Length: 240
Ligand code: ATP
Image 1 (cartoon, helix red, strand yellow):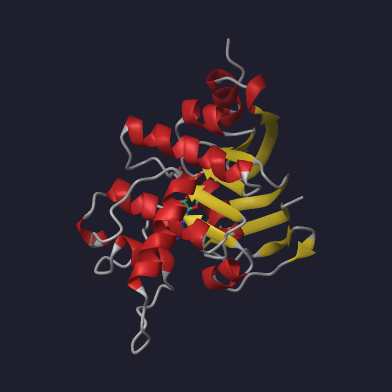
Image 2 (cartoon, rainbow, N blue to C red):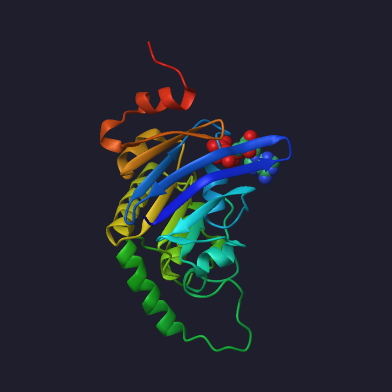
């Protein structure tokens, strides 16, 4: 298994956001996480990516137990998150954001030609076209989001958590992202795909896990799910 979590608990003060969640995801799998607002999807994604620390529970990556101290620690273990809160540096170019470390390097020469050619190679691999020389802060949010995904790939993340990755995208851009996600999985990367858009989740994911009120409800293969079957589980009701 690429990722296993067991008994994950998280409280934010009085809010019990995750109540003992366990699941396993295979390498090369795109796993959807769905649930109503507040079900705990983002919290689980953030815990997997080291952004939020769980109160209890265990995590294994490629079979090895892992206790993450931070997002940087997660990245060092090949885990990256692409979230709504963009982590890009607006005054740097697209290529710099994607190919360099987060902090601008002072006094260290950067070979921009090399940077650009590595960037273009990577963009082609993922299927995004972005101007490598544009200042990232001047681009649309959708383009910034694509740069974030490229950055995760550039850092050779094996496990990528995508938290509402299409929220800022047009439907064309969302389709591009779905195609890129499938390509990343075909390379053996594991994707955790958190989204409210059930049609998109059904299109991109191999399997879908439903969370409800901080609890794991069930996991099923996308081909045997429909938006209705997912909503039924998300709400904990049986449709008439
Ligand atoms: P949404 O789809 O609305 O993002 P979600 O399923 O991703 O929902 P979470 O964002 O994980 O759910 O939130 C789970 C619960 O924890 C919610 O009640 C939310 O209000 C609460 N919560 C999340 N983050 C924090 C925080 N930083 N501080 C306090 N409460 C939080």
